[in-house]
Image (tube, rainbow, N blue to C red; front, top):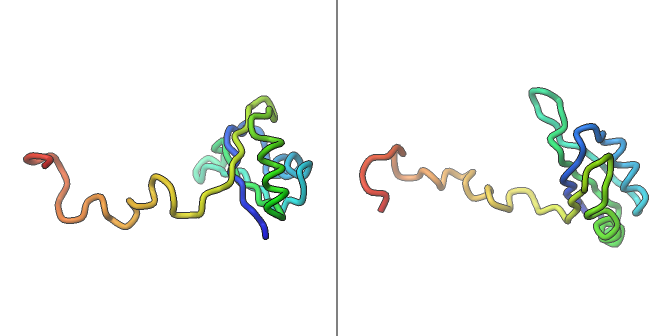
Length: 108
């Protein structure tokens, strides 16, 4: 089963094709994507690589985490499922339920 990896610390010049090329050294790459800014089209400095198997993904983490590619040190780790992490709970409106916001009165 394919396993998705988060790749941080990418050089702004690294392309999706270059990312695929690099990670192919660790095994089969299903997909490689550098995340870009919607407005400017410029790299945001991170991306995702989907390796063909969990074993190949583990090999890629060991091989590339902390390694330099295109002049930058990579951070490579298993990607977290969508919706998990620090911002996942805020999307449902849980932050401002029950009131108008602003700074009136006590916070307790």
